[in-house]
Image (cartoon, rainbow, N blue to C red):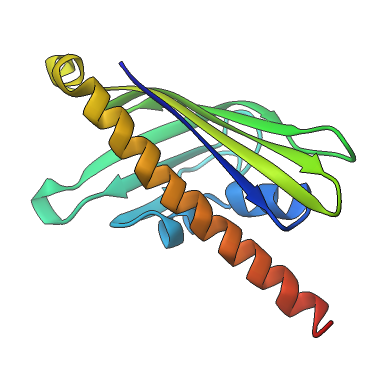
Length: 159
């Protein structure tokens, strides 16, 4: 099993960052070579589903996910969303939390625990997959932070 955790502080309120993170199709803006589409059913909350298609041409694969836990941030209370990955290539779970901090900032923690098919690949390459995941999601969370901070600045105008 490959596991990794990434932490990113964002200069924006937790509710704004949460809103961006649960806009599932928007993940394709931040994750390289990835397009995300929702599936029929609830758009948010437990039971919401979406599929991330990652790769190019015949080397692309689907990563279907279903939300199994959902608590949006409110006031000082952190938010947390957990998904189960049920694809032919990637299986496991992922979750993120968004914790409000002082001065309208927040901290995002992203965790993944996945197995890649064939499972022997994960056993052999688990440390490499964990490192690649950590580096990839660190870049993704930096992109999320930049977008949300830029959107917030554009809405609030010049200071």
